[in-house]
Structures are given as structure tokens and as C-alpha cells.
Image (cartoon, rainbow, N blue to C red; front, top):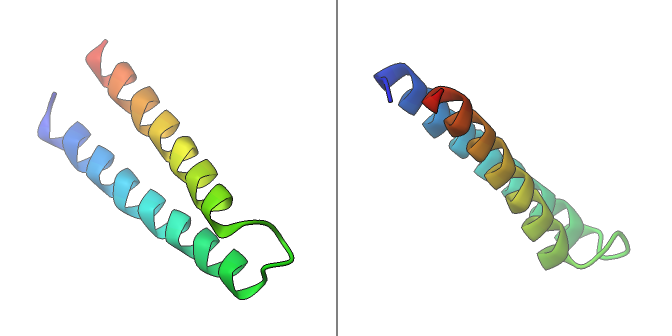
Amino acid sequence: MSTLVLLVVLLLFLVGALVVAALGYAVYRRPVLTAPLTVALAGAAVLVAMVTAVTSAAGQ
């Protein structure tokens, strides 16, 4: 993979981790929404799917 692709994947990971943390914090502050762990794990699953899509597209 090129350096640009690796940089994009790193930035995607960092932004995704920030989103997962924000989701976890939001539902921690408002427990009525849902369990914090469930939302954080769902966000992490979306992050993994996005990174997989980017790396598979870069490999072609």
C-alpha cells in the first residue's frame, strides 16, 4: 500500500475512535438511550467495516 492510503486509513481510524468515544460518552450521560457498551461496540463495528472497505479498495 502507498503512504497516502496508509495515512487515510490512520486518519479514518482516529476519527472513528473519536466517534466511538463520543457515542459512548453521550449514552453514558443519558442512560435512557441505551447501554453505553452496546452503542460503543456498534460504532466500533462500523469503524472496522469502513477500514476494511478502504483497505480492500486500496489493494485492487
